[in-house]
Length: 358
Image (cartoon, rainbow, N blue to C red):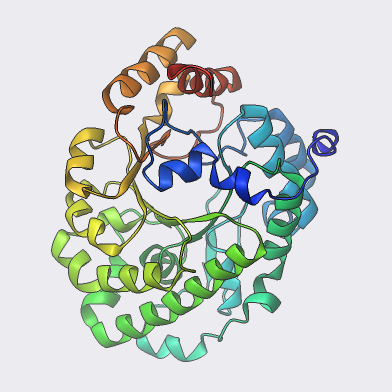
């Protein structure tokens, strides 16, 4: 993997970046075919990534700027996508708040001790972005230097609701009982927590932009568990505050899963692009979000089908939506482990071939 990086050491080229298909799509400019990048495009489905993980624990990898740059650049080059996304994890800010973050082998993330009461807010630290998360910023700087000058780099963070849910649940959840109980039981404490997370996340995203990211994505992976009324009352105002605090001129992608019932409200948050999963019809979602761009939304499981079917399904989605400006082709969630690399390559090649030479 490391050898591939030496070929691409360069500085970001402002004019070339601005003309990139990804940033043009963010501006909703007409394109012959949509740009394509994939969530978790650096991950366990790649043999080279697995080899690094065999000798490097996950958190240690996230905190090693050289390795982060290596896996980020390698994945973008190997797949030939139209944007790179920094290799990181949305829970890293939990440590900056004073929580213990671990990834037990074979399990999901664990946060200790979970935040279960209003009194627990008193133990939250006030994060210092450079001191607490400087390794992410350094990874962005090194990745930006190593990427081709025309290829945009996406930074990211977890949305306030999703990060709050992890802190309260102490890890993964299915019913989000503790989170919703906290929210319903003490709306004032919930408001306090969300405002703190908005401030932290805005500072974090803006530091990523200053370090060299051309766009940012906000992952609200768990917000689909809420009713539209709860989203309106407990979450939407904070998403609006966060999006409004991002460095002006920076494209902001807001992505969530199972958010079909929430799209009417999500469209009002000010995000440049709304990302949707495969559970919603792409064109119906677009009719709802209106003037925003749209990102998505091929089912990641399609990539386990025979190559011919992967190509057919990709072309089917392209035939439906490629004429609309502002579309970024992506999966409806991240690439799954054990996904055949050759099928990922077939997807990217099919998207690029759709509109002729780029």
